[in-house]
Length: 412
Image (cartoon, rainbow, N blue to C red; front, side, top):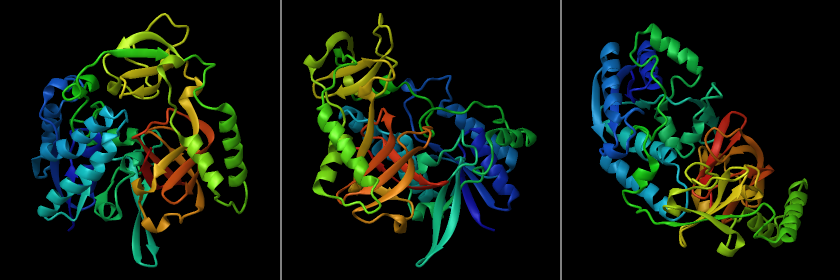
């Protein structure tokens, strides 16, 4: 019988994952990943790892399966935490959960499972795995979860064919309420446990306190940009928009130098200067904030809430604007260096000077948006039918065809 190691997180999803695999006849081992030692930044009432570990052990005992804890804190710090610090320090916004899946769960954890003789590793992700036949043999697909409110395929957008071949997602075809029903029927302690909103197998952290471990507070100014002000040449942007739209609407588009130049203009993140607005407050460090953020600015007395439009970590300035519809929050296009592109099935990658109509999201839980993926050689571009709010450098854009996640890349 095939052996599978389940990443038991102490939550209901991984608990039912183990339950279903046992019912399907697998030889199941439960393993809890300890990724973090510093409890000072973990919000104690939001699933600290000690409580999760105990719950995972009780689930394993209830199901009658072997259980062990593996300490991956060294690898987690090197591959995830150090990356987070570097990204925030440079003014970019990382997504550690995407990297945790690629670097920890389906790499370090998978290798540890294989040492136990495992054929597969399984997680409680709400996504599904498909299979297709290609000219070179079997290929695996990453498909959205059946529960659209819980679909977590985005978090696995960077895993490879080799990793996906070894992965099982037993609850991906279920609705969340059904998962809880199965847990309750099996009398599992996690049946009614709240879902964790924290970092991968760590718990919910206080991000400012977490970042302050390495990125020290540094007081700076908050600049408000009026709605009517734009730091870009509006005519140039309008002409670039018309050029790109016209070419992409052509049945046989030609990727000219002017087309690529227009895409670069439209995908460039907004950049302000201090004299573009006025000082309305102070902050404790530009590297603690991200584009689109509302909470934490602590500036009152405005008709509408302030949202972060840009963070300038070099000069320690935050640029903000009133209202969720401030034009500084929106653009139609983003750029991804081709070296940062990852395809779940490499044979589905589009060739240079080609385009592909897809649906895409630039953050977890965002509704999929109509878009066109463009391969321009050294860079790929995502062109959206409608302007997108809060496109953020460092985050992952992921694109789909129907229910299948095709690929992803780090936004420039």
